[in-house]
Length: 338
Image (cartoon, rainbow, N blue to C red):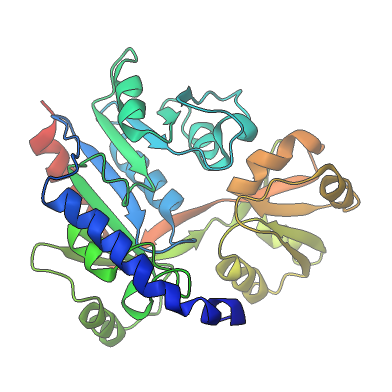
C-alpha cells in the first residue's frame, strides 16, 4: 500500500457510507431499477482492476452463441465517442473502446454495443434486427439502474474481496456486503494446482450465501500467438528475443507464464487501457518482434506491419466443476427465454 493511500484512509468511512446508502436506496426501491422480461446477465466485480471480466464475457459468448441470439453491452472505457455505438469489425478502439472491439473481432457474428447508459444501450440493442434474445452486460455489477436477471461476480485469487477494503485506501468499489447480490461467485486467475484445502479456506473467507454457487478458474494461454500474418507457435520464440507489451491491470500471470517457458523478452508495462502516444508507438516500432495482449493488439495493429505485432490468446479455464457453471447459466437461459 503506497503512502498516499494510507494518508487517504480517513476518507474510507465516508466512501463506505455513500456507497452503502446508494445500494440501500436501490434495495428498498427508493431508487428504481429497470427489470426485463428476457435474460440479462451482468458480469462484474467489487474491486477495481483486472479480475477477468473480458475472459468471462468471452466464455459466456462461446457457451451461448450457437443456441441463442446474443448481444454484449459495455461502457466502452476511454473511447472518444458518446452515447450508443454499435461495434463493427471496422470500428476502432478510439470509437468503441478496446474490449468491445476485441469481442467483435473474435466473435464477428455477435451483436456488440457500447453505452455508458445501460438502459439506453439495452433498448438500442433490442431494436436491432434480428433482435437479440440475451444481453450480457460487461462490468455492470454496480450499475444499479438496471436489474439483471443473473449476476456473475468475479474476484481475483491474488486480491480477494474478502481481504480488501474500500477505496481510496483499498480497491473495493463498494462494501463487501454487496457480494450478496451475486448468483455465482468465481475466483479467477487461480493457479491450476490449487488444492481442495485452499479452495475450502477461500470459500470460508468469502462467506458465500446458500443461494450462491462458488467456482474457481485459472487462465489458459494458447500455445500460439496470432497476427495478421497468421499464427506462430510459442515454441518458435524460445531462441528468439522479443518485447512483451502490456496495457492491462495485471500482467503478472502472462509474464510468469512466459518466464516458465524459458522465453527471453523485455517487458514494457503500461497502465490498463493505455492509449499509446505517437512517441510511444515510434519507440515500439524500433523492435523487430512484439507480443502483446488481445486488448492491446486492437489498439496497436493499425501502426505495425503484418509480421511485427502478435497477440497471445487466452481463455478462462475452470478448475473442476466447469460443467456445473455451464449448467447454471444454461438453466437460467432456458427458464427465461420466451
